[in-house]
Image (cartoon, rainbow, N blue to C red):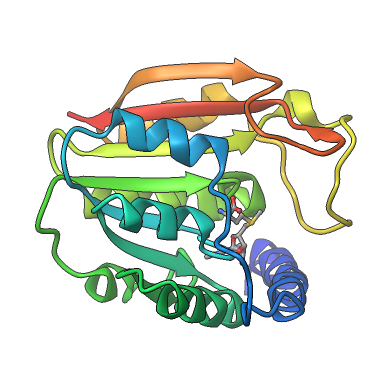
Length: 221
Ligand SMILES: C[S@@+](CC[C@H](N)C(=O)[O-])C[C@H]1O[C@@H](n2cnc3c(N)ncnc32)[C@H](O)[C@@H]1O
Protein backbone atom coordinates (compact mmCIF):
# COMPACT_ATOMS: atom_id res chain seq x y z
CA UNK A 1 0.00 0.00 0.00
CA UNK A 2 1.38 3.44 -0.90
CA UNK A 3 2.10 5.88 1.91
CA UNK A 4 -0.68 8.17 0.63
CA UNK A 5 -3.24 5.38 0.99
CA UNK A 6 -2.43 5.09 4.69
CA UNK A 7 -2.84 8.82 5.23
CA UNK A 8 -6.08 8.90 3.24
CA UNK A 9 -7.50 5.93 5.12
CA UNK A 10 -6.87 7.44 8.56
CA UNK A 11 -8.39 10.74 7.39
CA UNK A 12 -11.46 8.88 6.12
CA UNK A 13 -11.92 6.93 9.36
CA UNK A 14 -11.65 9.97 11.64
CA UNK A 15 -13.90 11.99 9.38
CA UNK A 16 -16.56 9.30 9.15
CA UNK A 17 -16.63 8.92 12.91
CA UNK A 18 -17.07 12.69 13.29
CA UNK A 19 -19.99 12.94 10.83
CA UNK A 20 -21.68 9.76 12.12
CA UNK A 21 -21.67 11.23 15.62
CA UNK A 22 -22.74 14.66 14.37
CA UNK A 23 -25.81 13.40 12.49
CA UNK A 24 -26.71 10.60 14.93
CA UNK A 25 -27.18 13.06 17.80
CA UNK A 26 -29.40 15.29 15.67
CA UNK A 27 -32.44 13.02 15.50
CA UNK A 28 -34.85 14.10 12.79
CA UNK A 29 -37.89 13.01 14.86
CA UNK A 30 -40.10 16.03 15.48
CA UNK A 31 -37.60 18.33 13.76
CA UNK A 32 -38.87 21.54 12.18
CA UNK A 33 -38.49 21.85 8.44
CA UNK A 34 -34.81 22.70 7.93
CA UNK A 35 -33.82 26.09 6.53
CA UNK A 36 -31.84 25.77 3.28
CA UNK A 37 -28.39 27.29 2.87
CA UNK A 38 -28.00 30.69 1.22
CA UNK A 39 -26.18 28.92 -1.58
CA UNK A 40 -29.11 26.59 -2.30
CA UNK A 41 -31.47 29.57 -2.48
CA UNK A 42 -29.07 31.23 -4.94
CA UNK A 43 -28.70 28.11 -7.11
CA UNK A 44 -32.43 27.38 -7.29
CA UNK A 45 -32.96 30.86 -8.72
CA UNK A 46 -30.40 30.13 -11.46
CA UNK A 47 -32.07 26.94 -12.69
CA UNK A 48 -34.08 27.20 -15.81
CA UNK A 49 -36.90 24.65 -15.42
CA UNK A 50 -36.85 21.27 -13.68
CA UNK A 51 -33.45 19.67 -13.18
CA UNK A 52 -32.05 16.37 -11.95
CA UNK A 53 -29.95 17.47 -8.99
CA UNK A 54 -27.28 15.24 -7.50
CA UNK A 55 -26.12 16.61 -4.16
CA UNK A 56 -22.75 15.32 -2.94
CA UNK A 57 -22.23 15.45 0.83
CA UNK A 58 -25.90 16.22 1.44
CA UNK A 59 -25.44 15.98 5.24
CA UNK A 60 -28.73 16.59 7.08
CA UNK A 61 -30.54 17.03 3.76
CA UNK A 62 -31.71 20.61 4.12
CA UNK A 63 -30.68 21.62 0.58
CA UNK A 64 -31.83 18.36 -1.05
CA UNK A 65 -35.26 18.76 0.53
CA UNK A 66 -35.41 22.38 -0.55
CA UNK A 67 -34.57 21.56 -4.21
CA UNK A 68 -37.13 18.73 -4.23
CA UNK A 69 -39.83 21.00 -2.84
CA UNK A 70 -39.24 23.28 -5.86
CA UNK A 71 -40.03 20.40 -8.23
CA UNK A 72 -36.50 19.18 -9.02
CA UNK A 73 -35.67 15.45 -9.07
CA UNK A 74 -33.12 15.02 -6.30
CA UNK A 75 -30.61 12.37 -5.29
CA UNK A 76 -28.62 13.20 -2.15
CA UNK A 77 -25.39 11.29 -1.52
CA UNK A 78 -23.44 11.07 1.73
CA UNK A 79 -20.79 8.79 3.24
CA UNK A 80 -22.47 8.98 6.65
CA UNK A 81 -25.18 6.35 7.22
CA UNK A 82 -26.64 8.46 10.03
CA UNK A 83 -26.92 11.46 7.69
CA UNK A 84 -28.68 9.43 5.00
CA UNK A 85 -31.11 7.89 7.46
CA UNK A 86 -31.90 11.33 8.90
CA UNK A 87 -32.51 12.68 5.35
CA UNK A 88 -34.87 9.80 4.58
CA UNK A 89 -36.85 10.35 7.77
CA UNK A 90 -37.09 14.09 7.09
CA UNK A 91 -38.23 13.58 3.49
CA UNK A 92 -40.82 11.07 4.72
CA UNK A 93 -42.00 13.33 7.51
CA UNK A 94 -42.46 16.33 5.23
CA UNK A 95 -43.83 14.34 2.29
CA UNK A 96 -40.95 15.41 0.04
CA UNK A 97 -40.03 13.20 -2.90
CA UNK A 98 -36.21 12.87 -2.81
CA UNK A 99 -33.90 9.86 -2.90
CA UNK A 100 -30.80 9.36 -0.78
CA UNK A 101 -27.78 7.13 -1.33
CA UNK A 102 -25.25 6.07 1.29
CA UNK A 103 -21.90 6.09 -0.54
CA UNK A 104 -18.50 7.73 -0.61
CA UNK A 105 -17.71 10.03 -3.52
CA UNK A 106 -15.10 7.60 -4.90
CA UNK A 107 -17.40 4.55 -4.81
CA UNK A 108 -17.16 3.11 -8.36
CA UNK A 109 -20.80 1.95 -8.21
CA UNK A 110 -22.13 5.44 -7.47
CA UNK A 111 -23.04 6.55 -11.03
CA UNK A 112 -25.25 3.46 -11.44
CA UNK A 113 -26.89 4.05 -8.08
CA UNK A 114 -27.61 7.68 -8.99
CA UNK A 115 -29.33 6.48 -12.17
CA UNK A 116 -30.22 8.14 -15.45
CA UNK A 117 -31.49 11.73 -15.54
CA UNK A 118 -34.86 12.79 -16.94
CA UNK A 119 -34.01 16.50 -17.13
CA UNK A 120 -30.84 18.60 -17.52
CA UNK A 121 -28.57 17.72 -14.63
CA UNK A 122 -26.95 19.85 -11.92
CA UNK A 123 -24.27 18.39 -9.67
CA UNK A 124 -24.38 20.37 -6.43
CA UNK A 125 -21.97 20.36 -3.51
CA UNK A 126 -22.00 22.81 -0.64
CA UNK A 127 -19.27 22.70 2.01
CA UNK A 128 -18.27 19.33 0.59
CA UNK A 129 -15.10 20.07 -1.41
CA UNK A 130 -13.25 21.29 1.69
CA UNK A 131 -14.50 18.24 3.65
CA UNK A 132 -12.73 15.77 1.34
CA UNK A 133 -9.06 15.14 0.58
CA UNK A 134 -7.23 16.49 -2.44
CA UNK A 135 -7.33 13.03 -4.04
CA UNK A 136 -11.09 12.79 -3.40
CA UNK A 137 -11.52 16.22 -5.00
CA UNK A 138 -10.19 14.69 -8.22
CA UNK A 139 -12.62 11.75 -7.89
CA UNK A 140 -15.47 14.19 -7.22
CA UNK A 141 -14.70 16.04 -10.45
CA UNK A 142 -14.41 12.72 -12.34
CA UNK A 143 -17.84 11.81 -11.01
CA UNK A 144 -19.30 15.21 -11.97
CA UNK A 145 -17.94 14.73 -15.51
CA UNK A 146 -19.34 11.20 -15.66
CA UNK A 147 -22.81 12.33 -14.53
CA UNK A 148 -23.12 15.31 -16.86
CA UNK A 149 -23.34 16.06 -20.56
CA UNK A 150 -23.07 19.26 -22.59
CA UNK A 151 -25.09 22.12 -21.06
CA UNK A 152 -25.36 20.56 -17.58
CA UNK A 153 -24.24 22.40 -14.44
CA UNK A 154 -21.82 21.94 -11.57
CA UNK A 155 -22.42 24.24 -8.58
CA UNK A 156 -19.99 24.33 -5.66
CA UNK A 157 -19.40 26.40 -2.57
CA UNK A 158 -16.37 25.74 -0.35
CA UNK A 159 -13.95 27.31 2.14
CA UNK A 160 -10.87 28.70 0.44
CA UNK A 161 -7.31 29.09 1.67
CA UNK A 162 -8.25 32.61 2.79
CA UNK A 163 -10.58 31.08 5.40
CA UNK A 164 -7.80 29.25 7.25
CA UNK A 165 -7.53 31.68 10.18
CA UNK A 166 -11.22 32.54 10.62
CA UNK A 167 -13.30 31.53 13.66
CA UNK A 168 -15.25 28.25 13.24
CA UNK A 169 -18.58 27.33 14.85
CA UNK A 170 -18.22 23.55 14.50
CA UNK A 171 -15.62 21.55 16.47
CA UNK A 172 -12.28 20.21 15.23
CA UNK A 173 -12.64 17.77 12.34
CA UNK A 174 -11.07 17.16 8.93
CA UNK A 175 -11.17 20.33 6.87
CA UNK A 176 -9.02 21.46 3.98
CA UNK A 177 -8.71 24.99 2.67
CA UNK A 178 -9.08 24.90 -1.07
CA UNK A 179 -7.17 26.85 -3.69
CA UNK A 180 -9.88 28.08 -6.14
CA UNK A 181 -7.45 28.38 -9.09
CA UNK A 182 -6.46 24.72 -8.77
CA UNK A 183 -10.06 23.54 -8.37
CA UNK A 184 -11.11 25.51 -11.43
CA UNK A 185 -8.24 24.25 -13.56
CA UNK A 186 -9.13 20.65 -12.64
CA UNK A 187 -12.78 21.31 -13.54
CA UNK A 188 -11.71 22.93 -16.81
CA UNK A 189 -9.65 19.82 -17.71
CA UNK A 190 -12.84 17.77 -17.35
CA UNK A 191 -14.87 19.97 -19.69
CA UNK A 192 -16.44 22.47 -17.28
CA UNK A 193 -16.32 26.19 -18.06
CA UNK A 194 -16.81 28.82 -15.38
CA UNK A 195 -20.13 30.55 -15.88
CA UNK A 196 -20.24 32.48 -12.62
CA UNK A 197 -17.66 32.84 -9.90
CA UNK A 198 -17.44 34.92 -6.75
CA UNK A 199 -15.42 34.83 -3.54
CA UNK A 200 -15.69 36.54 -0.19
CA UNK A 201 -17.21 36.84 3.26
CA UNK A 202 -20.94 37.13 3.87
CA UNK A 203 -22.13 34.33 1.58
CA UNK A 204 -22.26 31.56 4.17
CA UNK A 205 -22.33 33.25 7.57
CA UNK A 206 -23.28 30.96 10.46
CA UNK A 207 -23.24 32.67 13.88
CA UNK A 208 -19.60 33.67 14.57
CA UNK A 209 -18.30 31.81 11.54
CA UNK A 210 -18.36 34.09 8.51
CA UNK A 211 -16.51 31.74 6.17
CA UNK A 212 -14.46 33.09 3.31
CA UNK A 213 -15.87 30.99 0.49
CA UNK A 214 -15.73 30.52 -3.24
CA UNK A 215 -19.00 29.81 -5.02
CA UNK A 216 -18.82 28.80 -8.65
CA UNK A 217 -21.28 27.64 -11.26
CA UNK A 218 -19.67 25.70 -14.08
CA UNK A 219 -21.35 24.64 -17.31
CA UNK A 220 -20.29 21.50 -19.17
CA UNK A 221 -18.97 22.18 -22.68
C1 LIG B 1 -19.60 20.08 6.08
S1 LIG B 1 -20.80 18.80 5.78
C2 LIG B 1 -21.84 19.63 4.61
C3 LIG B 1 -23.28 19.19 4.68
C4 LIG B 1 -24.24 19.97 3.78
N1 LIG B 1 -23.84 19.98 2.40
C5 LIG B 1 -24.44 21.39 4.28
O1 LIG B 1 -23.95 22.32 3.63
O2 LIG B 1 -25.08 21.56 5.33
C6 LIG B 1 -19.87 17.65 4.77
C7 LIG B 1 -20.61 16.38 4.45
O3 LIG B 1 -19.82 15.61 3.54
C8 LIG B 1 -19.91 14.22 3.88
N2 LIG B 1 -18.70 13.55 3.37
C9 LIG B 1 -17.43 13.71 3.81
N3 LIG B 1 -16.59 12.96 3.08
C10 LIG B 1 -17.34 12.31 2.16
C11 LIG B 1 -17.03 11.41 1.09
N4 LIG B 1 -15.78 11.02 0.87
N5 LIG B 1 -18.03 10.97 0.31
C12 LIG B 1 -19.32 11.38 0.55
N6 LIG B 1 -19.67 12.21 1.55
C13 LIG B 1 -18.69 12.68 2.35
C14 LIG B 1 -20.02 14.22 5.40
O4 LIG B 1 -20.57 13.02 5.89
C15 LIG B 1 -20.88 15.46 5.65
O5 LIG B 1 -22.24 15.13 5.66
